[in-house]
Image 1 (spheres, one colour):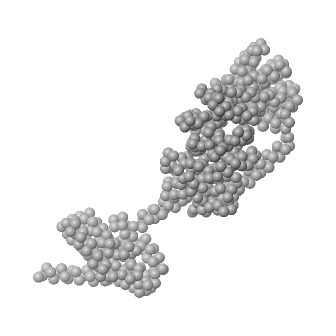
Image 2: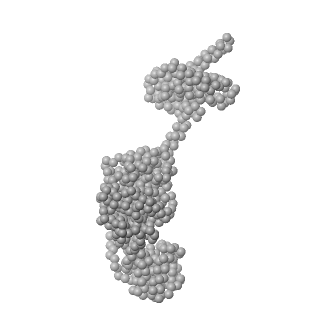
Length: 628
C-alpha cells in the first residue's frame, strides 16, 4: 500500500504488442475505480528464449517490493518462463502477497483466462451449422504441441457432435505461422483434395491460407470459406477480412478486477475462472461484417507511426553514440535532455558510476543496489541534475505518478546480461505508439550505457597500464621515460629554485661478484628507498641507471638535511639487515635558480660531476684509513 492507495503489480513480457497494451489499459482503468495503482514489470524480449539478453531483462522482477504491493497479477501466457514464474509466486507466498494468474490453471491460486476451447468450439459449430460445408479441412498448429493438440481435439469433438466422421487426411499442420501454413495449403491444392471450408487454429495461418487459395485462382469465400481464431488486428487488413473469435481483454480485465476485490475482501482464495472469446463474423466465411473498422484511418496511423519510429531511431542512435563518448554521468544527462525521450525516468546501479569496475561482470547477485543513481527524469527536465535515490522506493515520484492515473511500466536496463538499472515509463494515455517506443528506447539506452561503461573502463585500464610502466619494478621510482615527462611538466610550471640530488650505490660490482645479483638488487632498492625517504614527498625520484638514482626537488630545501636523512636511513638498514657488506651511496646535490634554462641531459651531467667528486673523496678517505 502506498498512502491510502493499494498497489497491484502486473508481470508480463512485451508491453508493446497489442494484447498487452489492451490488457494494461483495461486493467488500469478498472483498478482505478477501486483506488488501486498499477505497476507493470515488463521485459521487452520473449523470456522463453532463455538467452543472455532475456536473462538480464528478467532482473526487473526483483523490483517487486512486496512491502508496498498488495496483489500480484502474472500474465503467465505472455511471460513464458517457468523458473521466473515460480520465483515470483514463491516470493509472494513468503511475503503473504496474494497472486492472480492469467493463463494456465495452478492449484492453490486464483486463475483467470480465456476459455479457448469453448471459443474455438463455437467457431467450428458456426461453420458446420450455418455454412453446412460438405468437405471440412483443419489447419492445425504444431504436431505434438500441447496447445495445438487441445485445439485439434476440440475440432474432433465438435465433428462428433454432428456425427461427422473424422479422418487424419482432414488435418494439415501450419505450425501456427504463415509460411508453413501457406506451404501446407499449396500441397493440399496440388493434391486435388480441395475442401469447401478451411478452419484454422489461429488468424496468422488463416490469412496465409486465404492468400494461397487466391494465388491459385480460388475465391474466398465463394469456393472455400476460411476462418481463424484469436481476433488479432491483422485480420482487418486481409482481403477478405477474416472471420475469427475475439479475445476481449476488456472482459478479461473486468473479470480479473472483480476477482481481486473478492480476494482482498477475504471471500476468495483459489479457483479457475474463464472468459469465452466471442465470434467476429466477417467476409472470409461468407457472413456479412459484424465489426466496424476504419481501414483508411488505421493505415494512415501506422504509416505515421512508422515514419515517426524511423525518425526517432536515427535520433536515438545519435544519442547513443554521443553518450558512449561521455566522461561523466552529468554529461550523459545533458545529452538526454535534448533527446526524444519523454514521460520516463531511469536509474543506474551505483557500480555504473564507478569507472574502475569491469562492465562485463556483475559485481553481486543482487540485481539492484540499495541506492540507485537517477540519470534522467523527464518530468523535471529543465532543472534536472543526477542524484542518488534509495531503490526501496522504486521510483522517486511514484505516488505522484499514481495520483495522475498512470500505469507505471518498469523495464530493466542491461548490457550483455549485466544489470545496469531500470527505466520507468509513465505515459498519460494508452496510445500503442508510446508502448511501441519502449523497446526502442530501452535498446538505445542499453547500448549507450553499456558503451559508456566500456569506454570509461578502457580509459581506466589504459591509465593503469601507463601508471604501471611509469615506475621501475625494482625500486618503485620513476623510469627514465616517465621521469623526463614529469620533469618537463615541472620546469614549465616552476620558475624558482630547483634542486637535483643524484645518489649512486657504492661498490655494486663488489656486492654482485661476491654475494650475487640478488644481493645487488637489495642494495639498489635500499638506496632508492633512502633517497625517497630523504627527499620531500613532492620530489621526482627516478632510477636513472643500474645503480644511479636521481631526485628533482622544486623550491627551497636543506641539502645538509637531505644528506643526513639519507645516511641515517642507510645506517639503520645496515644495522637491521646485518649483511656481510655495507650499503652506502655517494651523493651529488646541485641547485639551479633557472631550471628552464637547463635541459635534462645538462642537469644529469652537472649533478653526476658533483656525485663523482664525492665518490672520489670517499675512495681517498678509505685508502687513507687503510694506510694508517
